[in-house]
Image (cartoon, rainbow, N blue to C red; front, side, top):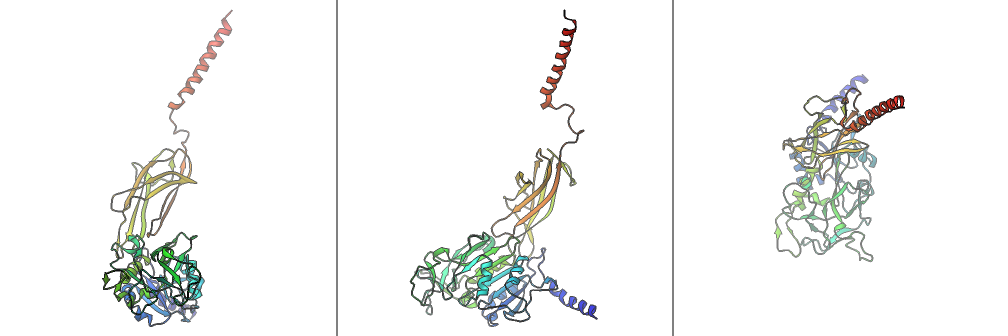
Length: 435
């Protein structure tokens, strides 16, 4: 009976696991959405609808649900995690800080949103990802020059920004049609973490402080050093978005008209919807996801990959690289893909040429050094998943019967040997027969 129950449980689990992330279809994902209040499901419905329209399966749960779990029987049930629960002091079920970090370390994606009610748990998750929120729990981002004109906001905490990262991979080909509305808390980037990037920055006149209190000391976070939205791409290609504002994703901010103080231009709709939609495409691998296939190498004039190369051989190396478009794979075209012929250090470094159809290739001569080499490609570019390819191949010296009979560079030595023999013969004749 126990065996039958286990089989039944696995059969029930198999439809869930079938939705898991697939390298061949990166957008076929199941996402867990954790909420402070189920009302967020309706107040942020435009954002959630944009995800479901693109084929995502969203599973909404309260953050303190006692049945929460990211994995079962050693298999992850979800490929992405959205935490819209800034005030959650703890997560329910089997979820805690280590579980969330393990989820990301396993190559899965995360969207994290904060606000003035942000708990220590959310701050700790962000800190582990290289983002430090303002330590003052009452602080908001304030800007007295780049704020949105509003009848309800008198403290200039409803700010506008179009200081976005210059990356078409992360934010799409189309430029933002309107500034982004933001009301929330500031954060800074940990300088020791080279993987975290600002996506949306505050203006030089912004600062982080409590709008209801007088400022007695200079604010810790000021100007463009304030990050409003940041992203992280791990070395395992997991992607993270961290926002200091939960309202950034709300229907209210997406539908609001925007008029910046001091500007005569009024936009009928903010750029929030475009911004978060494009950003979600990146974080869930609809853009900038690369794969490499058909790695081949062989001697010039041959097609079969050898088990070993000989020093000074001439060889060809090729690889096909494709990029996911959200629906299918298209050839990736770039002029900066390089291959190394590596043993302790690169002996050969060549830039690969391409045919505009995803095929990259080059040829070179094996160095006059024998040992165990590797063909290595380490390709890391802003916004793209990294490619790390390695293929080991031994290089041997000439065998004794593979050398030329007479080596041109050895002619002086040949001459020296024969001249020595001739000199000794002449010396012998003179010594024996001269009186």
